[in-house]
Length: 394
Image 1: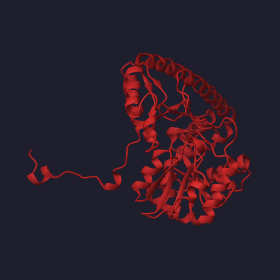
Image 2: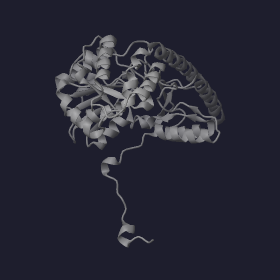
Image 3: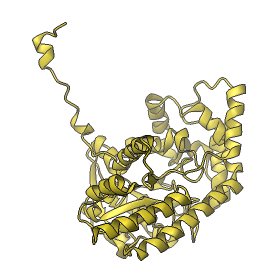
Image 4: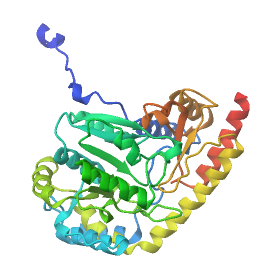
């Protein structure tokens, strides 16, 4: 049946706020999966998610919840027992006394960032985002109508901002998003550096959003929580990384007391509640320490393989990878376009990795990110395939 002319000519036009760049890592993951389905051997170093299932106690708790509970809506801010258990975790891990009322359980850390940005910032507010950095920060802020100030951070400062750099921003921004350990570099702020930034933010009236989702995944020193130096920061964490529960979509945030009611209202309207089964399962996550530490040792070994193997291939400029499970490498001697390089490596060598332009609009064209969260076979296979590819290109 023919459509009326006025309907045939009509075309949906997406909003301007939806016109944000894609997260290329997910596109690389999708193409790698398609190639693997066709029978190609793929060495996947593209996406930052653990290669292991959720810990055994979590799986057992989920099974019990399926059998015994209705699993209907929970309170918008999360079940009380999980909020209390997370607060207890902060006492044990950081020596912090956190009121469970300030602990908000969310649908992944992504839900926490959305609620934080909506609660803390008005449309038009300027928010500083270090570059390189996780692309969803800037893309989510832009979609919400905030003005993103990309702050270039190079190897000389460990790819992290400093108070001196922040002092140079005029007028004062409304907010700063910070990650330690960071994605994609894995670099960490020393405790005194984090303390200086937290205190500068509080003196300057700048709202700090501290992304701490890679805490637990560190290789020389433990992560430091921004709340150890001030009570007004928004702290975001997740069960996805250290606790290996990526697909369970469960995170949390610690908010200032004055933000609780606003977050409660927004959470109820946006998501009703976080996934119920994930919340009940996560109650058991904190009892899985031996299994989780064994995972960290696997990452540590994979990290060593990459940090030792890449320089042998002439890739020597590497971020130190203090935490998380990434190596961020300067490959400017191989290309000035890492989007093209990553596409070629996937098609010609079966290596899936993420181009740096996902993370850095300034220098990302010369960087790649490689995740070492997978298997040793993937890491060693990728190095071998990369060695052969570089030899062919020479």
